[in-house]
Length: 201
Image (cartoon, rainbow, N blue to C red; front, side, top):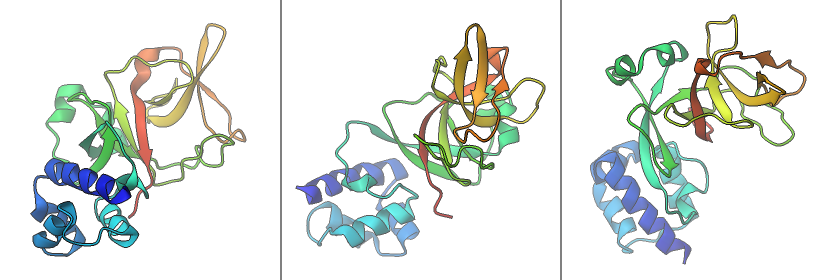
């Protein structure tokens, strides 16, 4: 039943956030209400599900979906902060975190908010301005994956699709009205994008 799935996902979310009180503060309710939902003592309908998703900045339908993945909170970094060495990134104190369902993550994983519109309007994928992406630096990038990287002759990292033409690599926007940009050294790829969600702010 869908309510069973919601309860299991809620329990996992509460554990990841650090307790009922944390989620209750986000929702503006009492911790006892969270406990009632989790243990079947209160109706867990669509309205309650969407309220939790909104409060925890989860994508719509997240709490309804059975999954074997784990909940992870990633620090949301500014684009310039993602250029820092891994050790320095880990020592940052971000003001905000984003919650993702991920199969696994490394200690160097982070999130970043998309600031340009070049990934909006694609035929197969569209990521509007404000989308928050999860970036995993420990995954080796492959052709046709989405990545967070710095194009040749530029200093600002961008969210693009990694494409290849012969021996040459490129960073391509999903909106084909914009040009692809070369990336001659794959070391300029900061990480592979493993998930994305639309910001609720």
